[in-house]
Each structure stands twice: as C-alpha cells, then as structure tokens.
Amino acid sequence: MRLLAISDLHLAAAENRAALERLPAASPDWLILAGDIAEQPAHLAQAFAFLGQRFAKLIWVPGNHELWTVPGEEGALRGGAKYQAMVDVARRLGVVTPEDPFPLWPGPGGPLAIVPLFLLYDYSFRPADVALEQVLGWAWEHRLRSADEVRLSPTPHRSRQDWCAARLAESAARMERELPPGLPTVLVNHFPLRADLLTLRRIPRFSPWCGTTATEDWHRRFNARVCVHGHLHVPGTYWRDGVRFEEVSLGYPRQWQPFDRGPERALRQIWPPPMVAED
Image (tube, rainbow, N blue to C red):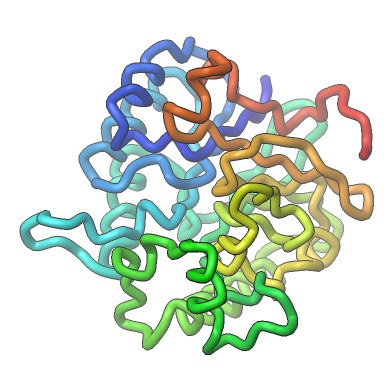
C-alpha cells in the first residue's frame, strides 16, 4: 500500500486526457491530486470518476486553474462560488477536499495525517526591493503576466491577497485545533510552501503567482514528514530541515511528451518513504 501523488494534469488538453487513460489500476494505493487537474467541473468529475476506479482513495486540492472563470461559459462561476462548485464535484464522487476531515494514513509507516490545503498566493514571492504595487509592472518588464489576473476572481474577497490571508488563517487554526500533538503529517498544497523551492529558471519573474512567505515554516510548525506541491511543472525532490518536499507536476503536452513522461511515469511515491538522498 503506497501513497502516490501527481498534479497539473491539465485535462483541458486532449493529449493529457488521452494519456491519463494509460494509467494502470493501483488499488489499494491512495492518490494525491495536487491541483490544476481541470478547469471545468465536467472534466474534473470525469477525472475523479476514472481515477476513483484505480485507487482506493483520492485526496484533492485546487490549483489556480480549478478556480478560473472559463471564458465564454454561460453562467460561469467566479471566485469562491467556483471553488465551492469544484468541492461539490469532489464530494459527490467521494474525493477528500480541503474542506473535509484530514484522512489518517493506515498503511506502512503510519499513522500520519494527510492535510489537503487551499492557500492561494499573495505576491510575497517577489524580490524584497519590489513593492507590492509595482509587482505587475516588474513582471511585465519580461512580458510575464499570469492569466489569473483575468481569470481568477477573488469574489467575494476584495483581492487575491485577502482571499489568501483568509485561507491561511483558517487553515492554520484548523490544524492547530484538529491535529493531535506529535502526529506526523503530509502537507499538500498546489503552490510550494517556500520561495526557495521555486524552479523558474526560464521565467523567474513569474514568482509572484507561486505562493506566500507566510508558509515558510509550516513544515516545522505542523510536524510534516513530506510536503507535496505542483504548479511549477518541474518535478523534483528537495529537502529542508530534514523534511522532504516533492514537486509532482505532469504539465502541458509540450513539457512531458518529448521525454515520454506521461502520467504513468509522473506518479511519485510520497509514503512509505522511497529511497531518496537528501540534497
């Protein structure tokens, strides 16, 4: 029995939807889906239904793409309403969300709590000498601008920063309240929890849309054994303070097809710990 993870399936791409069908059944394994699975509820439901037949349990957190208001979609949902609609899809199909009780891992090396998080970002992964009000202009100097600026509404919050602050406060309070002292955890968030995990060599000025410095110590604060994230489309294993951080993205077809690294090869083992060396 293993705890596996993958993210950034981006099922809006037909090539990714076709590749997902190659994924073999792996029950009794559990699967973490660390965001950016699909932008439309129908695609998300299809993914959950398919993967739910292959794994014993699914744990999902939203990425920014799940929160997008899809252009041209009649009656398109925005902000918090879109998030709730995606949570409803997950719950209908028995998938654990950030709004549900933390599941306890019953397999080898347990028990530990798997903590799905929805935290967003607040532009604090920017250089110290770039003011918040200057961050969009700073990124645009390199012709970088996240589609979130148009497609990810913060409604009913005033801004994405406010939504992020609310999620941070709610999530931290809940973990402090519900996690027993000393219980190890696996923290799952779409965005990396630390700025020093960013791997944006080709687009370094995309960093403002990649997380929040408020979570820099959460791996220690909440007794993590492993932290799982996606978003960067650069899979890798990293170590901080003796804690393993796993970036588990698949990515867009142009990113995985040249290496024949489809979903069946992109799956990463989170627990029990695989044989990995600390960097």
